[in-house]
Amino acid sequence: MSGGADPKRAGRSTIEEVAAAAGVSRSTVSRVVNGSTAVSPHALAAVHAAIERLGYVPNRAARTLASRQTHAIALVVPEDTTRFFGDPFFAAVVAGISDRIARSDYILNLLVASDDAGGRMTGFVRNGGVDGAIILSHHMSDVFVDRIVEAVPAVFGGRPTAERAADFIVDVDNVAGARAATEHLLGSGRTRLATITGPLSMAGAVDRLQGFREALADAGLEPFAERDGDYTEEGGAAAARAFLAVAAGPGGSLPDAIFAASDLMARGALQVLRSAGIRIPEDVAIVGYDDSPVAVSTDPPLTTIRQPMHAQGEAMASVLIDLLAGAAPPHRTILDIELVVRGSA
Image 1 (cartoon, rainbow, N blue to C red):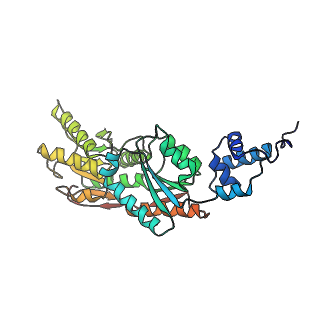
Image 2: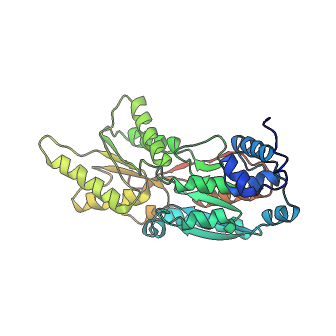
Image 3: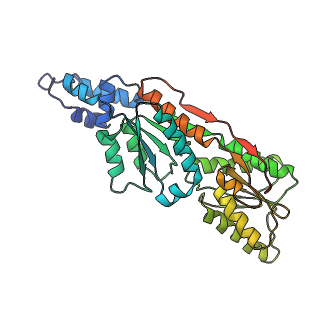
């Protein structure tokens, strides 16, 4: 028998059967049937092949139902609530997203969870709860995010660890930001440079570590120390205590400069060092990252890398709204960073 449609089945197949045959979600089949461009070429080919093989004929009423919009957008944040509500970065980005959505016909649903073990968050999105999703603070282990991206048009806030050509991403140049921070420290005569990284399960943290290393290599230097952090104040404090412990040992010494991959970690490190009698910046210069309100709360205030967090949020929402309108926004939107010099360096 040929590979064409079975005449006994023609018109009788369901959208669920097409989805199973194509290995995609029901929502993906619906988007193909309704002419959406927010489908990968691989999925598009698989759905068309399954439709031809099964002889699927879309029901007009079903197509109308499938194309019905909720006029809701999900902001998916795979973090625990303590980190989400404790980091000013999220407040600024969410404000930008909210401001842009307020100028549209959409409403915003906030979904915050460090994992989705029960599948409730994924199920809400995949079962038609929203028209699209913005994914912010994505970790390598957040595999449930793939199921969300498969189900609805999505925009990543920050480069995902497994970046694909079809992804829509709004980000800053984190490599360039870390280079600027490190070059500023080098330019002030510092030679024993340490860094406190963000979680290396996140692409942005990996990029900031890369920029730090590249700037040192260009200057003919090796990193004095690298400590893993988690973007939290306690993470920065723990790294500073580790630096002090090494310096207290035989032949030990402190770094004379620290690049912390977030303002919160920079503040944690600064407070621990000052409590130990270390002068900032005379003994140890410190540069943070974000230029959040944290940067002006320290004594001395933090030199930092300013990323336009509110503008990032607005851009994420704008790209998704354009996608939902059937437009073709750029797959990569990269915003500028800026070095802000204050008393800590």
